[in-house]
Length: 82
Image 1 (tube, one colour):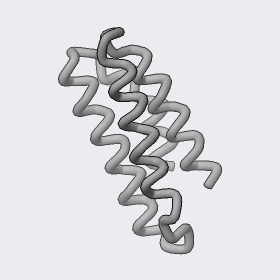
Image 2 (cartoon, rainbow, N blue to C red; image 1 turned 60 degrees about the vertical axis):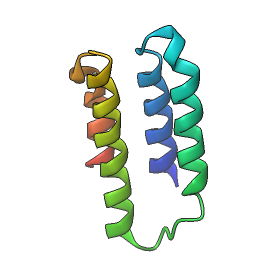
Image 3 (tube, rainbow, N blue to C red; image 1 turned 90 degrees about the vertical axis):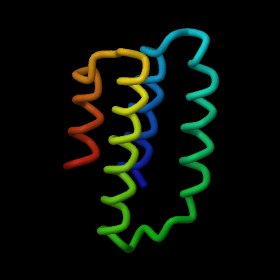
């Protein structure tokens, strides 16, 4: 659970780097996705790792969409792949 919260916080920090008019949408999108998966089985480490990797990859996709340098996601990568 702690790792998921750290990832969520880092995703929200990345949202702040997006254009201002897109931030509310992506902040809400991130929250909805994390809420949807809160009942996820925490005893399945493989499934959790897949979910965390998906969060990282989707974050990169959004950053690329708005031409934000991917290096800002290095901390998220560190958390997701640790």
